[in-house]
Image (cartoon, rainbow, N blue to C red; front, side, top):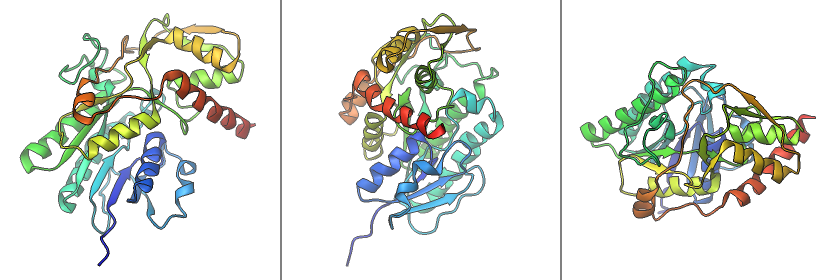
Length: 318
């Protein structure tokens, strides 16, 4: 008798990270089910998978009741706006997908006897007073500021997930994702890398918020996907950081992008948004020890791979 193929549900699977996870699980031999309401996702990211018999797509908002027929082995909850330009435009939907959506999917995991991994974020650390950020740091978040809709949705998501683990014994995993980049990001994403890439390739000024001294740490998408895959299959249920600890100031990053694209550095300075984090660098000690994981792709290599994607996007828009 043939062994049943393992089935995984990926919410937000038409988005940047979600679509790369779909590719990985298809490659690993899973039956992949995507659920996405396409508010920020794009079917172009997964259209190459529709021809596969091991792929299904549900156009659905996980903030409403969720049902998937058949058994499920794993659920990966990646549905959520993930950039300020999105969650500042739809703050209530952002809060709902982190709260109601998470509750619905935890309930589905209970009903199916599935293990669930939820996508949290480095934003749970807010504008950190501890540097680099380790998982035992509780954060410095303004719950009523403009970024609170995203930060607090993710913090609640973690709390709800841990409650299901402790009270119901549900198999749960929590990943705190630091800045990630690669193909399938949107030109109008609003995050710094797509913004710089788009502006540089168009010959425009690069927009610097504040004085450019704030730092970020950028992880290439393939590295992140590998870490998520290892975490899902691990025995570790507490939050774990995944990101690249190579830290850089925003101004230095602008210089790198201009050098990569061969354009003259021109910067346009704008006011710093409220509660914008001044520092961001993951402590990945736990990921190294527990998952035997660390990034393999350096920023130079990853950016070189990514720039060709953005060049093609701009060609398609002409």
